Length: 357
Length: 155
Ligand SMILES: Nc1ncnc2c1ncn2[C@@H]1O[C@H](COP(=O)(O)OP(=O)(O)O)[C@@H](O)[C@H]1O
Ligand SMILES: [Mg+2]
Ligand SMILES: [Zn+2]
Image (cartoon, rainbow over all chains, first blue to last red; front, side, top):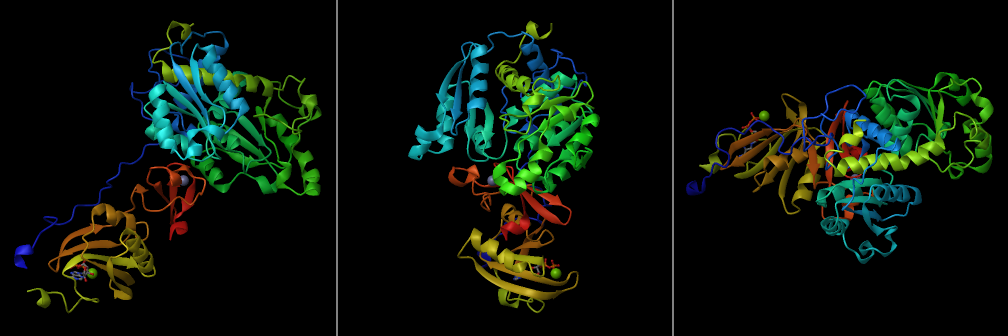
């Protein structure tokens, strides 16, 4: 027995030290030391924070990276476009159908001279035959320079990024993330207000289930924006999100009347209150409180703009369309510019002279 | 020498020659520890002491695992249920290693994600959570679906 004696751990046990590294929420910058300037100008001395990156979750992007994308989108919209994707093949993999997101991504690729392969719904893909997403992505990555994907399950894009040798761009993973929607919202707000900083934002409608408003609020909170929250009692913003807003030092306040907050805000972000969430009489009763009509905007500041992720049903009355406050159609158009900026920056280390003009 | 080991008189449960003693488990959490150990190894030989008197804690639970010398990683998985516990690795009746528990930063491959629509279920990956202390409770955020769950969901 004595001969069997083994001291497995000589001396006393080591102090606890985590064996798995702390996971950093910020994406790694493989090419440079990071952007330090606070100025809202494009400085090409600074490294491209997006080059070769996966875009899975909006929280992967620092405020500097968000500004960089938004400013690049602005230049592109002003005409600074080059064939930045010439000779590149991108995959557009929609395991779940989505007209708007897919078409704007594919337009963005074509406008920069890129080629596309892919599929527009999951119906006849290898997933149907039981192939894992991991294997599918590994295979597609070996054919292409980047993969744009939408998938009905939460976490699909994160998983894909772990198996892909090329950048993954998340076009929506179930109820989880849709970072390019947030990017186009940020671009639209930047474009119509001239800044992302210290704005007063009204978020209206379904604040409970809408991932669009959740991601947008979290992103804007990092720029010092404040929020007026206007929703039915059954659809208020979840506590965990309010806690995250507070943790970022953002001010928010619930308001019961949309009309009464209009004079105080810079942006009204409307979302749809879905009929299906209420019984019909209850819906009739409350829906009108979350509908915006042109006459409610008579006390608005001149620079106020109304945004909506579209499609709208009746939450913005058509009377608003012809006012100077309507911005939702421009916002939809901006989806292409925001996605062009993102793809150009991911696939090119330097966009060159055209960005300095 | 073994049977006449120096501490037999003080031991509140039978001495083991080789294995792991999980000590200073808050009273009431011993069962959760047993549950976890059984998941790690369904054939593990366990002895359990519940509500034992303890100088420091008033009362405590204690779990002994025969013939299994825990690694640090295995120990830290249990920390979710007993962040204050001590893990004592016993060989030849002696404590040869001691880990003071502490919450891990991440937990991988231990629990399934409670979100049934999470991609982690049918893919060649381990479940993976980021651990967060939130006031008096622990929350786990799924690395994949990004949902956050209270630790009580995993017991
Ligand atoms: N051979 C053994 N068999 C079973 N339990 C043991 C053995 N040796 C020590 N223990 C238990 O392991 C824990 C730690 O032991 P030790 O480091 O000696 O004392 P303590 O940490 O209480 O000062 C105690 O609960 C003790 O009862
Ligand atoms: Mg003791
Ligand atoms: Zn999950």
